[in-house]
Structures are given as structure tokens and as C-alpha cells.
Length: 282
Image (cartoon, rainbow, N blue to C red; front, top):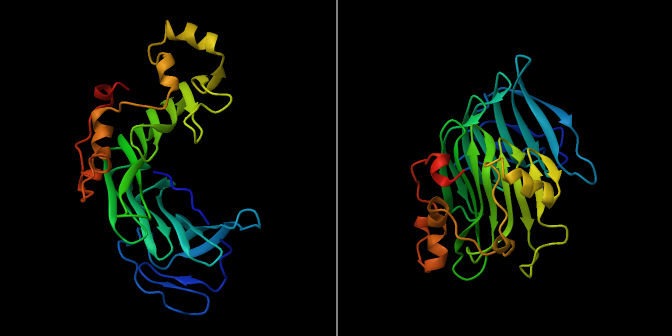
């Protein structure tokens, strides 16, 4: 899961340790729940990308005995937004994303591949999602929690990952859990299929659908011709230009709590055993 930090210009006097953070003024912010850094203590941080007016994030490398063991991203207030531990140049350990004083997500990596159970929290600290990867393979899920009513949790992103690469369908779901705002298909990290994006009125945006073969954009005629020989390409169906979708079971089960009106959101993040991509039609 790659979470783009949302908002950075970190003061030079900012000091940090594993489970506590200090601002430049020396005010201790206290331990952060669910956060235990995989980056060793005693590292020195070196800025390698400075914040600008149009991009207010500061990127730093974490050095231990001259070796890069991690990277962090800070916002303009000096607060941690994102953290990636490294080993031999590959992501290894727990990757964290934050909102304010809270952990937004934690995802374990091993040797550059997601491996283990990733978890996601809402701003109020509620656990709202989890999924399991095995050696970089599985179903990557992301959820939102409404800020009105009972604060229901719903699925907003689902994509298939194989050996660390996007491989199969990617869907961006709307709150109804029956429609999508965007749909793409990948093959070993390359766009390979039909890309569709809809507007707020559930109509295809201008210029869509778009057709892709191994990362190269082609015409509809070229795509249809290629489909006759390349069975890894999803077929074109006119009805798919509408945003309504019937999702595979392993995706649909994560939409249950919102659609059924359960007071509990436990079904929204239940951990399912990883299924082979071939079982999902990928």
C-alpha cells in the first residue's frame, strides 16, 4: 500500500526517537499508539528533498554508520507523515503512514515485498481495516469512515497484487459499494486492459474508455484485434461502460457492513485467507 502524504518544512531543531517525538521547541508530544519504528535508534537524518511552496513536504534519509536504513517524510509543522525502513536498499520492516498524532496505517514488508497483515485506523483511532499479503501477493484494500451519522466504514480501493506488482483489476468504489469511480487492469505493473473513469454524475469522463497493451496506449480497433490473440486482455463489453459492478466474492465480502446496515463494521476488515489470483480470474 502506497499512501501519498497529504501535507512539510521541518525545523532543523526537530529531534525524534522511536516512540516519542519532540518538536523544535522541545515540547514532548508523547508516545504514539500503534507505532513502533523499525528504523533503529540513534540514526541521523539527512534531507534529500526540501519542501517548496508548491510541495510542502520534506524528505529525509535515516543514516546509521553512514548506511541508509530508512526514509521519513515530514510536513511543514515537523510532524511525521510517512516512514519506510530499509535493509540493503529494500523496504524491510513496518511502513507507517500518519494523520496528525495518529497512525493511519502500518504495513509489514520483508525483502522489498509486503508480507504479513496490514492495518488501517480512522482519525479517531478506530481500527477500520486489515488485509494480509504473502510475499507481495494478495488483495490490497483501503477504506474510509464517514464523518457524519454513525461514522460507517466503507471500501474505497481494491486492487490485486502479485509478487509486489499490480496485477489484475483495480477498482475505486463509491459509497454505495455497488458502483466504481474508476477501473483499471494491470499486468505485471503495466496498464494492460481498459481504463475507465466516471464523473460525479456516473457518466464516463471525456476521453474514456482508454485502451492499453503492456503499458502502451492503443486505439479501440487495435485493442479489439489484440484481444483475439492475447487472452490476458479483458474483453470489451458495452455494459461495462456503466459504473455498476458485480465484484468477486473476495472483494464483495468487504462491502457487507455498509450494504447490510450492520451497526458493527467487523465484516469490513475481516481477514480472509489469501486466494490465488487464478481463482479471481486474474
